[in-house]
Every structure is written in structure tokens, then in C-alpha cells.
Length: 182
Image (cartoon, rainbow, N blue to C red; front, side, top):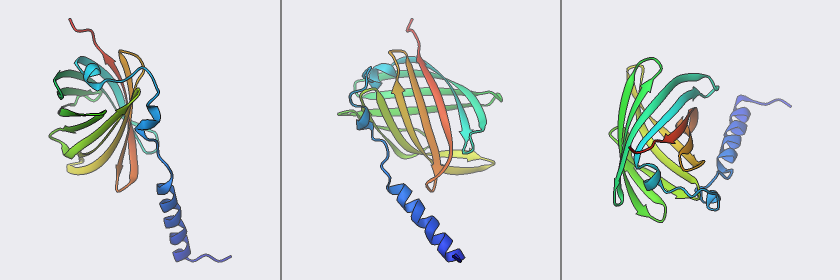
């Protein structure tokens, strides 16, 4: 069989289209999972996190810690995050969240394009947003698909996939630990 370049391109495009149609996980898949995640309770007070960014090939490119000061007033929350990277760089992001009821949330931050959308069910939280990310003197807008899973009343794990134009660029992994309030 002799395949032309056009045939190969069509086959590749068809495979990509079919892969996009495959079912992806839904937050509702976790409705029965425990412990039950109440975002307003977990992100209220100090939270510490340790994480890393891995590129699409799995190579760790950056390691970091995050100190978070979190507080809620009714259905409005503020997550004040200070990132400290292994190379000495620091970064700050302040999320302003709104609980819409029925496990749904929206959020804004200065480097987020538009509004983040989130949803909880059971022990899981899915958070999707577009972030302005400085890279080599330019700013890229990249999409984040965050999944957080409450392990117990203090520990939550987070896996976020970063992509642009639907192409996976890498993954952020975080382990959150809720601190005692003194």
C-alpha cells in the first residue's frame, strides 16, 4: 500500500478527532468518594503546599513551595498564594473565589484570563482556567485543568494539566497540607 502525505495527514487528523471524542472524567464520578470536600472549610486559614512542574516528557523543570493565607466571608473567599521556587524566584497570586451553590465556584486572579470555573463532588474539585504565563520574555495564555482530591482533613493532592491549543505542555503536581490555626 502506498500512502501519500495527504493520506497520512487525514489519518492523523481522524485519530486526533476520535481521541477528543473519548469520554473524560467528570467531577460527578467522585460524588460518593469520601471524605467530603468543603472548599470553604479546607481553604480557610493557613495552607502549605509542595509541588513541581514536569514538561510533556515527564522531566521535572521547576520545584516550589506555596504558603497560602486563605479566608472566607460567607460565599466570598480569598486565597493569597506566595510561591517560592527552588531557583530562588518568588511569585504571588491572589485568587478571589465565589461559591455559587450546589458545589459550583468561580474565581479571578490578576494573571487569569476571564473567570475560572470550578465544581466539587465528593472528595474532588475540578478547576479550569486560562493563565497568562511569562515564558522567555513573552506571555503565553495556557489552559489549566486542575483536579484536587481531599485525602483526609489536612491533606489534598492536586494534578493540573497545562495545555495550549489542545496540546499538552506539561503537568503540575501539588500536595497541600492544612496548617493548625494558632
